[in-house]
Image (cartoon, rainbow, N blue to C red; front, side, top):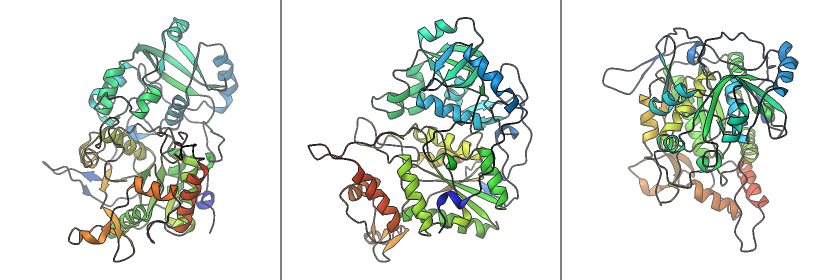
Amino acid sequence: MASMAALFIKTPYDPSHSITKFPNTHLAPTFRVSVSVSVPPGRSKRRLRVSSGLIEPDGGKLVELLVDEPLKDLKKGEALSLPRISLSSIDLQWVHVLSEGWASPLRGFMRESEFLQTLHFNTLRLENGSLVNMSVPIVLAIDDSQKHRIGESTKVALFDSNNNPVAILKDIEIYKHPKEERIARTWGTTASGLPYVEEAIVNAGNWLIGGDLEVLEPIKYHDGLDRFRLSPTELREEFTRRNADAVFAFQLRNPVHNGHALLMTDTRRRLLDMGYKNPILLLHPLGGYTKADDVPLSWRMKQHEKVLEDGVLDPETTVVSIFPSPMHYAGPTEVQWHAKARINAGANFYIVGRDPAGMGHPTEKRDLYDADHGKKVLSMAPGLERLNILPFKVAAYDKTQGKMAFFDPSRPQDFVFISGTKMRALAKNKENPPDGFMCPGGWEVLVEYYDSLVPTINGKVPVAVPA
């Protein structure tokens, strides 16, 4: 079977586009669009209706922030003359997200008004009065010395860790970084040990700088995986090429087991039963920052490739791509961001499972979030009304059938729940899971990954390097 790289046709990225300028706002112009879902009075469950064509992006058009080709040299020269801000790896991932339109209609790092709307309302109000969902702040922090160096300049240049100019941030606004409030409202706790907080906020500067982005070049990582990082525009072109009349997205940051595959194939069956003719799956692993004990992106992509090669998922109806966003592990707040971004990529259905974007409490032995709140919040979230939410059925290993199946509460003794923790323990110890839990090729990749981690002298396996 063809490799995963050949499962879709890459189209050349065309950075040329026209972006209408709106004063004092990041928000692109909006257009009224017809929606394919409705919410009956007093109910959160949405009525689904079969419709043709891809869903419109938030705000009516994708906001792509790459500098036009004829202006690149001029802008690079300008960047060298401006006050500089060095980007962390997570900052660069957010530039990537913004540049391709995943956060449409944002036009750059948030100014204070957008930051406050996001923090307090999980939405942004557009010029026509309508709302789009935006649940996590996309901000850039600077310290006192950087603020002093910027002085009265209205523009700054953003540089990567190799001292290469990445973007210009113009019409800037600098405002205080309320770290404690940001953490409390995003995560619902200020407990120590939250991975993204420790990595990107605790030691960040006391100021935030917002403005309109002009990105000089497409963001590339040169890690052998750039061919999988399709932008929203490229994904929409691929869905159109495949004649998709529905796109259903499945995000994950873990290896794919047969329970996941059952959920995805059953979703396609349900969409066909609803009257769609060619629903396409967007298998969309998260590719930005993840916590240290998650399986790194490169190994996850190898595992996903084996899942397709072994025929667990159909390559003809599956598009595999990398979602460039960093991971917050912020539960019901963050899952709204994950869903909103997939609208911009053309998805009109979103599969959501138990405790999406959640994690264990960092200091107590319990879940940080209620396992059911993610899917409940998605069904009610302002600005996501156009997106059809498809809650998981619970899948487990059925001992009577020797495969993953939907849990039947009438015979609980026949099912085994293999948690991610147990799966990792089996792989680390080179023990095989029950037949039918994961395709053999995919399991071999997982064992190989844990085998690649050299144990310390006390026999413990070190944590993985963040993706």
